[in-house]
Length: 408
Image 1 (cartoon, helix red, strand yellow):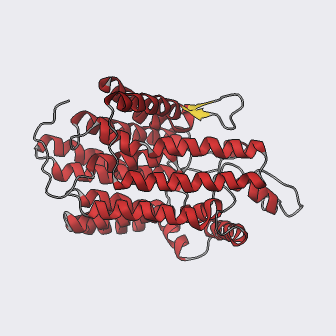
Image 2: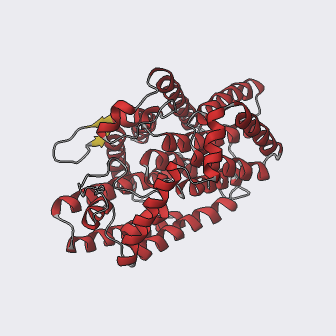
């Protein structure tokens, strides 16, 4: 059964690359579900039955912190029954189940792949990331103008890599995690031919990441590479600075985006307005928030979707979130949920520092945290999935040696 579960795991991982193209319309479920969600649901049920049959469930401190977070978010959702309608509660409940499934990836990865860096899983992650890079390049070349999708709630991006996520910020963060993973493999792989192949993939991924023109992605990359280089090779951060300066001087749009971050451009103004809206809701609901994933309905109650004529809208695809993951948790789950999230992140960070793979684990964690200050990527399940899989694989205590050739 373990082999079958691994096959489903690989399928779910690769299906992440489909992004919005993998959405399955389901009657009665707002927005439908994604193929990856369905596969992950199958995986979770199969894994749970398998563990029951073996009569063993391993629980680590990270697992407990995840359960603590899920309990806090669910409590906030139950309290939301006092004001949200049945439809809003069901939407929030479905999203809570979805987040719970993705958070379970940490434990599922640990159980299905007990040895460090299983070769097949490592290759599958490489293939998954490379496919997503290829899809991003194809989208940039063939579908550069998203103005036609503005009526469907998508931002009208123009000549930016969005890949199948249809968003440069989320696609960019996925590329950052993938790039840091590749750097880790490059420094742990001893064979020259493999290093050459990894170098080519790193270069292609880096260029694709650059073409997202996402400032939050650039910041996450800078944080991640800096942390990684401090533990592995400080020449990496020097190379990043040189490449960054060249890109700044030779690519006008990169220069415009970076300068825009130092001033208050239209994007920054919209983000500040979003922060202000979140604080308005947090002020009135500080302890348990308005209820997990009920932010869209709360904004409607507060009249935050009305234009200058007083006409209300649903706020597009971003209407259900906030442009800061911590503010999103605080607004929807209150101080209780923010505390539980902080506990989980602190546990992961401490365990990462104690791991033999601290360079990779700390770099992906801190890069992820930096990115979530400007985009709610912490609850973007495709990114969360890759992050938790990497944590699940590489969170090995210092002093534990790699197996020279793990058995499949």
